[in-house]
Length: 561
Image (cartoon, rainbow, N blue to C red):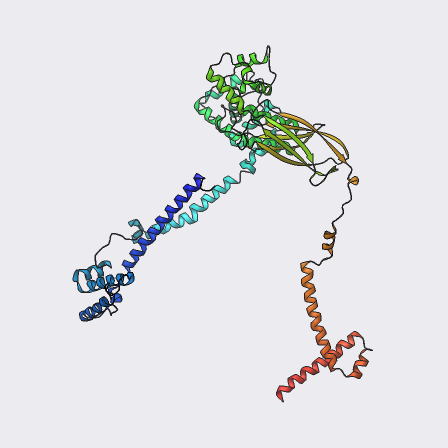
């Protein structure tokens, strides 16, 4: 398996090559070290003050000893013979001796040198004071300043890299009555999306004027920065043309929108706002697909305009929803009459990317057969993506107007029959089969309860699923009495490790005391022992103490004698 993994094979090859280069460098450095440590006097075994006759004598002796003819096949002797000849040459030849004294090698300067290259101004003594000042400035001023700037910037952000100022703004403007029409302004007012407005930026003024003519909800904030972001978001959902500069600002807003929408959901869930939570998810769908409230969900499909949508929703074989249109066989889909073959193929391809879920719900309490009052209930949300082949992940969503690649995300929203939000949790798994578990407390009173489970897409309109599930809660008093296993009961009778250690120390101390008492009792006269039974415990301890002192005095007196 490992050998079939291309990435593993490439890593192994790179590792082998790196080790080979490393070993070659070590060998080269070792060879250079040998040259640097070449000492002809040491090789010949003579003193540095030796005369020429001593040099010749040592050379003759060692050359005969290590001659290859006398040591056939001995590599060590052969290398030593070469060193002896080289040492003799270095001490007898004037040029070789000069090279050795100057370069450390009788053959002169070698091509391989190991050194550290430094700029010349670092070695100039006149620059040492300036270098020290620069070093201290970097160590004492620049690095602490960088850390301080980083800390001042990072302290502005909370969980999921959302600014605390944004959380404060959301808390101020969001409520249980927030509608989808209000949410573009909420998103535009976040601290991450506040872009400056130039005085000469007349395009924003014209855009706001156009949007005020029925395309935009009446703004709550007239601040230029918030109004600019609000206008850009409305221009996106209405698919209006923008200049390159404004389009760049819009892309920044859209790129940060998934995280900021998650922060809105977090706030709405903490306040238990059911309708606001649903509106936030549906606003995310509209933002990803660049659609608005009056647009039909079929407008998510490529090459679908108002003419194609009207053809699909009217007449024979009309469809009422986006899901219903996707379930129609490809050969019977309406709205394709005016398209080219390439456009028809593109539409069919996009329809195959749309998630088709087989949905299942289950409520249970782990390791229990029934649900009692205030039990911790587990809700299993299981679905199978029919449009995904086994072992493959879900394809990226079709969002041609969104500036980044996105993958499917879903929200499971649980509410009771009275419309109270229980929880909202995000599902980001991309596998074909997803088993997502969420937990919440069962109601405090016994009875039969009905919960609404909404599985809502963050990316597509018209694919949401709503199911109802019933929960039967029994009184806690009807739960069977818990009976422990006999083996578990026996564990309660066994001493703990601490108790075992303390018991062992106590036994040791008691045995020592008993031995001492027995030795003392042997010293007591039988008549006194008989009287001892008439004494109290305190009197017996004092008698034993006196006997111990007498014994100690006798032992101290024996060495002196």
